[in-house]
Image 1 (cartoon, rainbow, N blue to C red):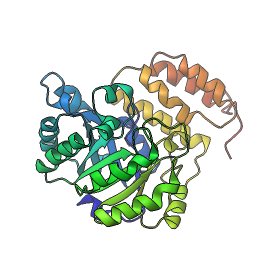
Image 2 (cartoon, one colour; image 1 turned 90 degrees about the vertical axis):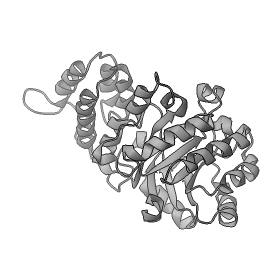
Image 3 (cartoon, rainbow, N blue to C red; image 1 turned 180 degrees about the vertical axis):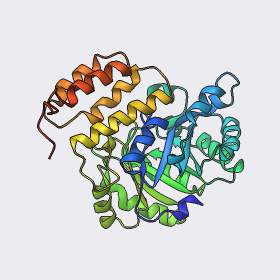
Image 4 (cartoon, rainbow, N blue to C red; image 1 turned 45 degrees about the vertical axis):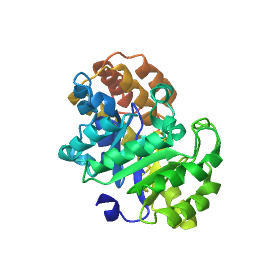
Amino acid sequence: MIWEELKKPFLILAPMEGVTDIVFRQVVAKAGRPDLFFTEFTNVSSYASEKGRPNALERLKIAPTDKPIIAQIWGKEPEHFAETTRALESLGFSGVDLNFGCPDKNVNKAGGGAAMIKTPDLAVACFKKAKENTTLPVSIKTRLGWKDPDEYKEWLPTLLQERPAALTVHLRTKKEMSKVPAHYELIPEIIKLRDQISPETKLIINGDIKDKNHAEELHQKYPEVDGFMIGRGVFQNPYCFTNHTPTREDLMQLLNLHLELWEKHPGKYEPLKHFFKIYINNFPGAADLRAKLMETHSIKEAREILKAYSGTSNGNSPYPESR
């Protein structure tokens, strides 16, 4: 089982809608891959629908550099969890993760994601159906609660009693979103709950973790935690799973790779712009270059701007070298 193969403290790239797709995962793998990837979250009701299945399967595509990778799914219909989970093993995944923590309004309105915190019996039913229909390990990602952080005292035991292979806890509530610091002060209590109820469950902490060094610092303080999941930290540094401090040239190379991969997995151009801030940041002239790229309408236009940026006729960069 994949969770038993990972050495503490293992690192995971958090599943993020519109971010951790097959293209960006390959970029992160090039920079320095985490120990484990997760897919974006796929709606089980879409997979169970003849009309929605092609889109669901598109979201579940994986690249060779993705493995090992966990498929993350969400929804509210137990039978749809069963049907989707049955198919995942044949697609090359190492595990299945149930998203019981997404704070997106549309997801919650549909009864999925963090809304599961308000319907614990349904959450358990969905987990049971998923587990019954696969030989893959089934894990859960969730939050402390819906409104009050103290909701974890009832919510997390409900999940742990089902013996998930792993439990990832984002140390905030749905209401808090990412507007407050993660509640690291609750880690000792969460460790106690895991040890008392399901000691075999791997415990993963998510929330405000910046990079590999930060995760190792936290592990020194909380050695009972098995792994750490990095989300927004990858926006600040796509090399966050390594000890490498990227230069401007490193980031520009990753951006060019992202453009190349995007062409191989064609889609609308506009979503690609959301990634520019990851690579064009924290160096002289970055804001101006990023503004110009945001005005483009195609990869061809973006490449022309990057080419003009990369040097003048005498080969000198218009901005100072990275340090």
